[in-house]
Length: 277
Image (cartoon, rainbow, N blue to C red; front, top):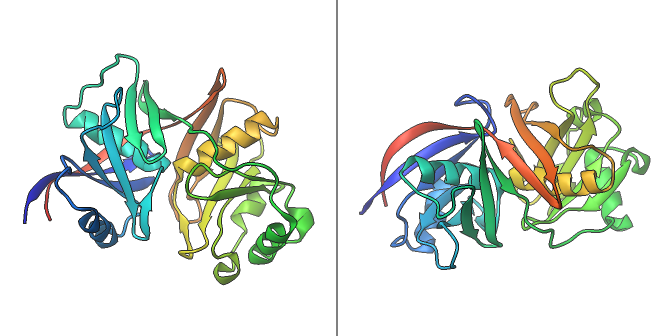
């Protein structure tokens, strides 16, 4: 077995237990992808990432992202968590104003915003209205009528997301999905909070194929923001709450700058050491 530097960080929270954790293995160039996948199953976190030397000019580092179900071309909270861990381990970006991550969807720009890190949302690979047949499937899985699905859109930036907007955050929090009916969709639902709440919207992320709810999801919030802001359904900037039902008070900070959507959150270091693989 070989020892590798290891970190576990918590993303989208200012403390160690309220957000979404990600495991990060450093200097992982000699680890075979079968071992990466096995370790992701073993950690049993939403994602485990592996930091490697970049192979594309302009990138500061390369990351491979694995869930217990396989490799992902992109995911949001592992992007922020991996960037934080890379910087903490002494990583020095080529540019003073941004960090450039290489991953399965290409190059992702990351900035430091005071106490937070934020990434530029990657382009959608699928957009447009959700088909009637899929909407009926979603409504049945959520125990809702079609009229409850106030707005809908494909918002896929890699994981296959489709999104629906309900009439309130309370309605979002009341959902108890039928996982068998939802499979194999990856679905994000969003609803507006009343004024006075610290968050503008409540978001939930349902992974239909795996049959579980993700605590706090950067990729989904990125693509939802691209849809909701551009459609005029929400104004920039705004804050998304996620993880409430799972007793995680995650907060995601979203803003539009020029033609880019930026997705931010706080990251806290929780575990440092080494792992033998």
